[in-house]
Length: 257
Ligand SMILES: C[S@@+](CC[C@H](N)C(=O)[O-])C[C@H]1O[C@@H](n2cnc3c(N)ncnc32)[C@H](O)[C@@H]1O
View 1 (cartoon, rainbow, N blue to C red):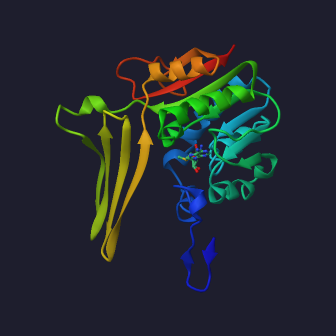
View 2 (tube, rainbow, N blue to C red):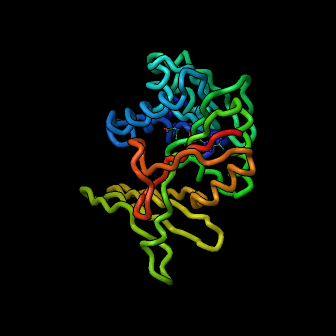
View 3 (tube, rainbow, N blue to C red):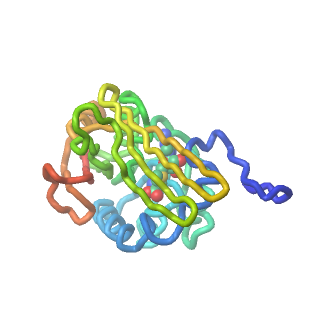
């Protein structure tokens, strides 16, 4: 929501880490929105949907859901942030997507789905093990027997740190009069980590800290078992490439018994 009188953005705290001020800049050109990033994801999801209904957990602004719906796949979504979800309706074809505002650990949507998916590391936004298990349970509760749950998430970068180090640089981008620095900081005792974003401008700057919880693929397989699902595929990327010890992310698919 924008306050025209002062031209400042008013963030609603119930929108969590993705309020209006973040949502407004989410759909920029390139990066995660580039066709070469979006299209392979949409290709695989459309294939796995196999003609059935699909549900995206944490659907955001519809970065993936809108092009998937444009392929004729019936898409629904659950999303915590009203500011993010509001962007879906403004996109061509977005009105076809049913979005329920709520928490993906517990919010239910009517009906049965062939595929539930959760992409872009968003399982890690749930910062307790119990909460992540609840996400798996909630996904399974929406699936028909034989239905699939897909998760795309990075593999923790712990191998980059020698003993005694807890922080790794992600991006160092100097700019005129300032720049941007990004660091990830890990606590291996709790599996909590933070993504730290420092933006320096000539007039000042901003330090934004986003909390996450990492889980290894094997821990997610156990979460799936608790939820009544078994691993069907584990790929290193959307192109179904082989997952191996140097893989930097997993695209995993579990099947409901
Ligand atoms: C990185 S964005 C990803 C959005 C979208 N899936 C995409 O790929 O562009 C993370 C989204 O997850 C939402 N989110 C975080 N925790 C959530 C939760 N517990 N329940 C529902 N949505 C959640 C945020 O509001 C945000 O829109």
